[in-house]
Length: 142
Image 1 (cartoon, rainbow, N blue to C red):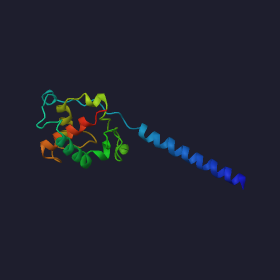
Image 2: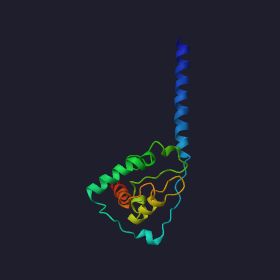
Image 3: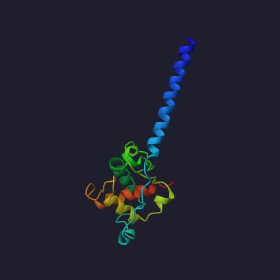
Image 4: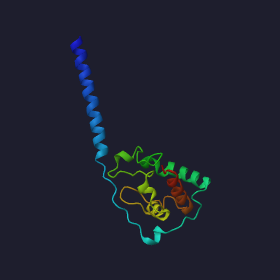
C-alpha cells in the first residue's frame, strides 16, 4: 500500500511539474513587440476631450472592458485571457515605457492597429470614445 501511495504521489508531482514548466514556456515564447513608429503629425495630436475628466476616464474604462480587456487585461498588464494565445506579448500599459508615449501616439495606435492588434477607427466610430480609451490608458499608470 505504501509503495502505491508513493508511486501516486511521485506521478502527481511529476504531472504538476510538467504543467508548470509547459505553462511558463508557452508565455516565454511570445515575442516582445517591435518598435511602433508613429507619423510626426500624429505624435503631437491633441485630445478632443479632457483626458483627466473622471467621466471621460469612466467612459474609457467601459470601452476598454468591451474592446481591450480580453487581450490587455483589466489593469493593462497584458494578462487578459486572449493575451496568452497571441504571438506577440500585448504589452504592459502601466509602465514607464508605455506611459512615455504621447497622447497622439496612443490615439494613432488605437486607431490603426497592427499585426494581431485590430484598429478601432471603424470599430469605434466616435473619435471621442477612442480618446476616452487613451484617458483610461493613462489611468493605468503605476
